[in-house]
Length: 178
Length: 254
Image (cartoon, rainbow over all chains, first blue to last red; front, side, top):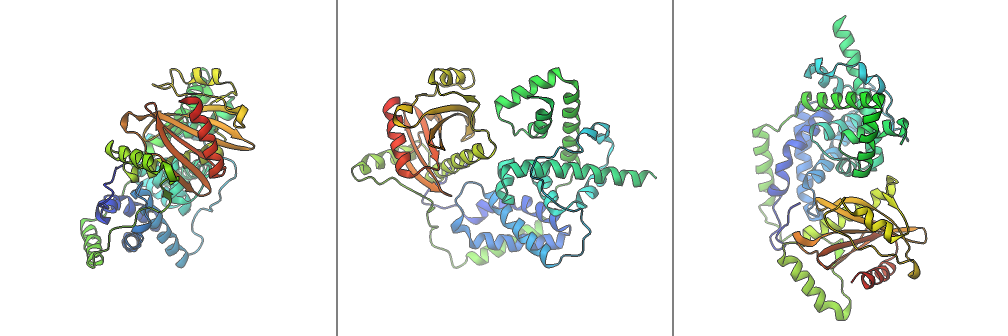
């Protein structure tokens, strides 16, 4: 947490540009296209700049990521390309389904490309929590603020997303070996 | 906790999201239960694989430059100084104004800026909300101050003042460990009717918190410091009731 000098508000560059990689990473994973991601991040940065007055100075990263997320979802809604994604549903109760047979999975043997392919096949809501937690290292509390959901939902959504990802990866690995 | 309850908490534990008390309880269980321990190991292996192998896409330098010049172009008609945050207002209780001004000045001198204390109030409000959502309001449940106070010993490097205010309508309900401002803090829980009041207490050695009043999403918060400790009370009860509570609390703890 930074202590700002009250009379000299930090500039947008100081506040937001350090989080440009995080913004770009989230947008690329959500939109699965680097050009679309650049457009979305650029749009998000301009929105963030214009709304800087409303930023209260505690977590620039979460604030920028929230805007990026919203821009990406708007874009995805606009050009929905058919039901190629794994169905998304939040469960009311935290699900640890699929964890039990995680025992049998030799995670260290999977290549990075396989994990990436698996993650790309998940619904955006699942991709989002995995990217925010596993790649960007956000805590549940921060994810709750970026994704606009209660902390309990973050916990169950993340558990479900990991379970789904595990299933996808096992399916892909099975196809590769046959 | 039984195996079912444990298995629901394994992922949160692996993510470092459990409170200290439940974490210790879970670790004790894992030492004695091979099934759950195996599951915990699998969860950790999966987490490590994801962390190590998923790529992070970084912004190309050309793109970074484009954003920078875009913002500079927007900035050209240089904006006036940013409005101060509107969500939190300073206490303004007539005669107290002078002493409050002093308290605020002291806060600044000690390095706690307005933005920082805003962030603290925000953090406390979300801790309060989370404690209600997660059903994790208390680690030690007791209406007896002589049970609650010793409970904190050994868990914190300071001793929070614990008082019962049942006789004035705010019974003590218990306490738990929290983190605030990046360090361990005590959270004392009081009741008013069906509502709860969280009082966060932590040492002021990194800077005394100025006396502030805040309101966010229907929650009222007030901060002060006394006797080398910082205090932050948060509740959904009205600002007047919270004020009354704090007056009683300070009377007993000063």
